[in-house]
Image (cartoon, rainbow, N blue to C red):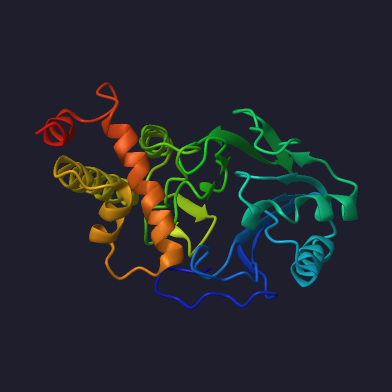
Length: 273
């Protein structure tokens, strides 16, 4: 299994993180995707569900096919945790290879919460987890104590908020829901980066980080800085590509602070003084 202190697997080399659950790292590493997009393949009983098939790269699709075929399975469904291209571009090409449906069936559609998948007797179900985007979902595998979190939870860092599509309020709600669902003997399988162990503790830490950032942005906003200025003040060493993502997250925080019913009282006071 790929842990935080371990080396990332090579694209094209599948890793079985648990019986019937394989990670296939996509060959699309960059400033946005870190080591690349994680494609997850769940197999069992002759069926396979592919979660976030990633970029439309023939070699990556071939590796997914190899994992499915080596387990004696065929792809029954393709599931997207959200619409971003690094997760979704290969959905249609992969589905066409196997004559399988894609969920959701429309761009920026949402897989309904509670949708269930039976993979060889192992049940998985969909939990709505917006925040990074409005259409974000996670896939819960209770028997194995795994949650495939898409980009709602990443290893090592908080994901950026794709404002105005994503919102801080939704993200905090999704983190609370995930924290109420799991114990620290569960494992998160994220859309980027290594697995997340002790997920309830990890969510507490990431939520505290998020709240500190809200307070930091509130202080800068109270001094009259724009979102672009605040992003540069908070992240003075970021390159331009990632600085744009940071600015989107700042704009999401400013929107959050403009909604008194959503923002914590302490940060609302700081933003107004």
